[in-house]
Image 1: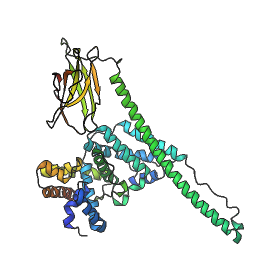
Image 2: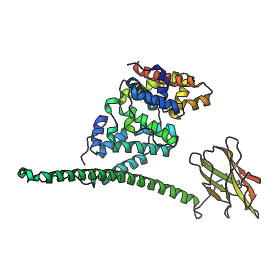
Image 3: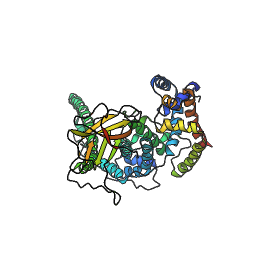
Image 4: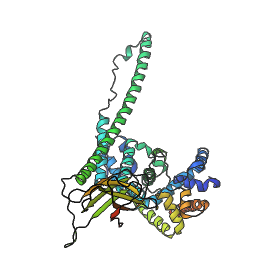
Length: 267
Length: 182
């Protein structure tokens, strides 16, 4: 077997999915025609699997197993309700005559139609089962997320900040930001009461040194606590820091103009 | 539902055969056998436990629905699942639809590492090879494999010529193959 050397490097990249554009199209076209390069691709994937298998990490959590086992049980339950092709009567088979042929042809055609409909039905059942499992799974995740968010945002929930003994509570904030999904949760506590016609504004300072991005206006409650959840943010911005400033009541959406009140110090 | 007698010595193929007939116990046994591999790879790529759990669920659900996707004559289950896990994790990282159907991914490893003890010995060798590999080569390989970067992105990141990156990745993969053949 001879590998085409001119494709060797690109084949390795293709095995890793690291090739795109015209180079990817060229190698795919070549692979359609070349069995030795297809075999080399399988071996390169095998080589790459060695890299993957060296990965060590924690075991998956028990909840992941429970989720999986529940999902396959649910799918099996739905599948078991599918119609089963039953046995057909054979008692009249030996009494066939030539004049029965047209009727039998019609029956055969009907049977084919029925089989086709049954197959379609099976496929639809499988799709429904899959969707049900996905819905159940998403529902469970959503419920957990809702519980967490409800607790965090519940004005009735007891929120107590712990500080070193003898220290006076200082204004504090905590921003939890996940760039990929643009999720931002921000909590502040012990903020001073707002002066008249003023408001607090949260700012995201991008890691690339770009202009600060307004991340929400907020007013603290009587105890100085406040929360900002998922303000509208542009896509893919890496955060370097977060700052809260005191701004005019309408906010300063272009750039912070007011006094910084609390400033991020990093993790 | 009848269930295949599953224990540590039940072959992967026997489990897959039982799964074909809808044996949930066999599927759970297969999950117990390989979920750590799939999760570890997904977590390494995604760096997010929730996203890694989603990949884990997705891959084993696909295997449950289509156990015939695994072709035992072309390789071992652990290597195949590791490659699928990496592909799916990179798809998730790049927020794109899966690039390959799982049955289209054929993975050949020689010698076959179907037995866990063989696999464990082989991994020791591979880890040793990675440790002795020149740092720029290992780094290029890991950026391509675990970060899903294209060779162009790696070249931009490292400031190295494209051809150098391509060659490093290929020779890095081949050096792992040689270690196993030795």
